[in-house]
Length: 590
Ligand code: ASP
Image 1 (cartoon, rainbow, N blue to C red):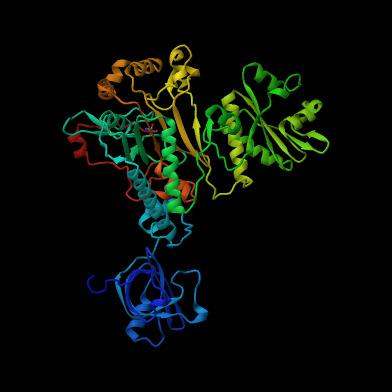
Image 2: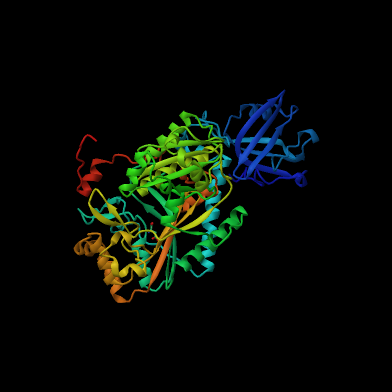
């Protein structure tokens, strides 16, 4: 490479460089032959520069130019010149100039590509992932990977400025109780024993607090063996943070300032802080989700006040059995067809609703669907719900949670279908006052809704055992545009409270000792009050890049079934490797 090493990148030359002799290195992005004149678009990470081989070029040069195919790696020697006025391309940063080539060297050839390297690739995602090295060459992927780098860099810059230390915690650990399944790694030396890959550095960061590192962070890889669904990856990256001697207000202020710095320095966007705080119950009631998209309003409303005395028995009996009837007024949508309403009903059903009732508001009152049961009170309904002629009203009657969640999903769908929001907007909020425990119906027991180390709110400490369902935790989520961006909590540092939590969730003391006795032991030697949070880096960058899947912002992601089509992991291993570990695979036909 000594010989043909570049003296400029493909993104830097401007009109002021005219007359310079340069060498460029890069990939052949396009090669057009216009009646004997070759126009080669040469591409590297920094941009594209037009190279011209004039029609009076020496034969050998013209022959090389004609032989160049997509993605050949070449070195071009030549002179920078201004393009003729009618050929200037304002869309390209280098569009003022071109290189009049005096020599072209092929450094490596390329086989025929499985897909074109284009900004908007229409190749199937599976093919893009199989040839990720090609996919990553596109400017759109390069921009996203660059953004990810910039975001990590700005996070480190900010936290370092605030006195945080980045401390690595181990990847081979004892299993962490975060609620998901662990990935296990067999030990060869301690045959029959296993490490777990961390679901998060949770226990280690808490121990670092005991050690006095009162401001810790780590951009940490986390591993969770969950069923592949939606946008999950078996491994993801968290901005893991823990602080001592803090309350949730301190955590919120830190994260708000950190994100303000990141958005300002990477996207040039200013965020308005403090982010609103919404209690979990209110978020569910109003938006039907604990990660509401606040870029549009479309609130869910309570329909219970209009049910008494109506002939529509489904609503009345739902209320009698302690359930809820929720309504969504969709402005100007009375023209929705049956088909459109059925589609929305399918959405509601996916979230557990038995159906989606509806009525329309016309200038003459309520009409269609279940309207006939409510005509006697149409004025009160319209006034109460703020419904106007031309509006569509949708209903779900079920348990409170199902009614809210199902209608919340319908709300999101309508928001998307009707483009009720500005996609470039970022609407953050803190969701607070989560229940500390959730009832697991299958196992007929209470379980921690976040993890077992979360502090109950002070006012519930005395009544934890008598009414677990009512206990709110000192735990919080950060949400943005309908995405859960972070979870965190103030932790338990008092061994007595920790023991009570274990007993409420039916976690045997013995098992606690066995699995994380080291944390409980550490707490016996002066644990400071502490708390933390862990924003997901993948999701943050995904939102910032305007993407809807984290695969778009991970260099080498797995596909939707947890496979990396490029290296084809996971894969079978050599039987000798298994023998060494003392492991045998039992074929169970699955
Ligand atoms: N370890 C938690 C999680 O991964 C985050 C935290 O509580 O800091 O969700």
